[in-house]
Image (cartoon, rainbow, N blue to C red; front, side, top):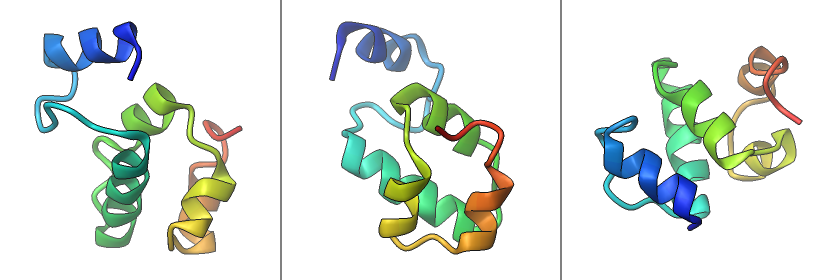
Length: 73
């Protein structure tokens, strides 16, 4: 994890996570999309620069990923 991501997490931008790897971020995004709570999804996707392919491979539904289309690469 780079210095900027560590600093952002340390400053409390994402209070729910203390240390988060890219793989854990993808899993968390999929869980949030499946449960319907989109509160931190946008923050995690933009913080880690996740792609639609990564999220789909992790098990998210196609419709939920289409909903994030404006922020995905």
